[in-house]
Image (cartoon, rainbow, N blue to C red; front, side):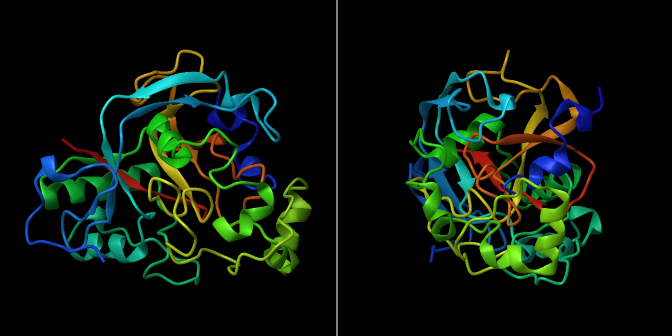
Length: 300
């Protein structure tokens, strides 16, 4: 069945509730401990080391806003620390790749919202592979996307609640999402007319489109914009449930691999999407203004 029919409808789902010191050479891997931040090159994303550990992946049957796609819950063990981008990849970082002859020369549009330190958008899963290949060549370190399990583990950062902040009412203080100001714009009204379950937050987050990365507090593992701002590609092929999913944190490489899993929600997502367990399949070759990426690599 086509990816769009396997899920609740990717377009509808997207809108539901819709100074680190840099050295001239990479630091020794053994020196990178949990919580430490580093860059492998001047133009590389800032990374933070996330510790090994175990967690319960997916949402409980009684979690408010839950989709069946988020279960069954299962225990996952991440056996070794790994490094994750502190921020979503920015236009500045992507443009550095293009300027150096990488990324297939593709310069994604910014929709008129600005480039620089805003998260790159309009990049497909396949485009992301070109960026990761360039980082790998530049640094000699194997960059990749997070697996879906790594993503949820890193975003939860030890929490078992729907979000890594205390409650839904604090959404605007922690994430760039669908707020009352966006809901009042003509664009917001148009989206809400088309998708009648957008449930905007009754607060103001200060941004109507994408926000510069790091505009909101980090989670306990040091990741900014882990929920909201833009959806993020993961390595995994799309599957409708977690039945048969890996339990060691590795990527799920079977299923519908023409679609890949995206996580995190974005600036046009409401509270039902802005949950650590929310997941969605999206065609790997498609570009969209709500989707970007965050990078990872192994350490040790």
